[in-house]
Image 1 (cartoon, rainbow, N blue to C red):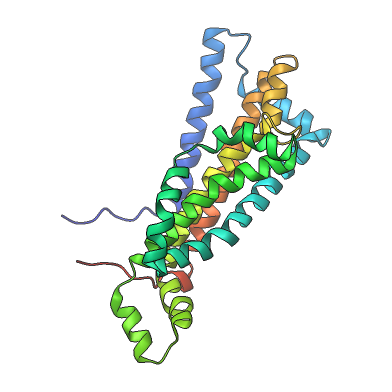
Image 2 (cartoon, one colour):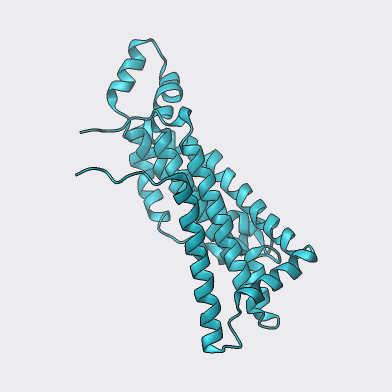
Length: 260
């Protein structure tokens, strides 16, 4: 069976635009048909966001959310990748720590909100801590799997060329595992973006998550609620597309592919 033809460039651009236009039209006519006074129309959402943007509120909320995600996420990357490489490189160490990782990993970061508030109070640190937790475990697990999936022949070839264990790990194993690690980083970023919204609803007084809960509680401004939800989705999509571009760079595409 022949593979499906790769979509043309104009198709990759046109079809998402068409789908978005159809969704907006469905949304608009659904609001008109139901004559609801609660759920806003696309035009009302646009007007509400424009007002916030004009007063500078929306700009600061977006930056605050991105800042918290950036700090928590890169802290998870800085700690999670070295630990994941270490655990994957030393199976004995992984056997010791893996039960603890598997115990903590399924706990939703949202469940840590009361603990985060106890540790850090209401503020940025609590939200950043939640982002860190949400991103840390996927990064560690992916790094461990990536290292363990590198074929043994790669390590033997490195030893034959006289490389030290540290050089084999940094110059052979890590680049070979990088494509899989990047997948984990992309998943972790998506989780981090989800978690920061939940954390901002209870732990801080700014950001897109706070905008949602504050708009709901202060005058039931559902135009702003829906607008913030759409912005969360759009920013998440942009972050995911950015990571997909990174995955296509030549330095990270040489990782092994098991053809068996």
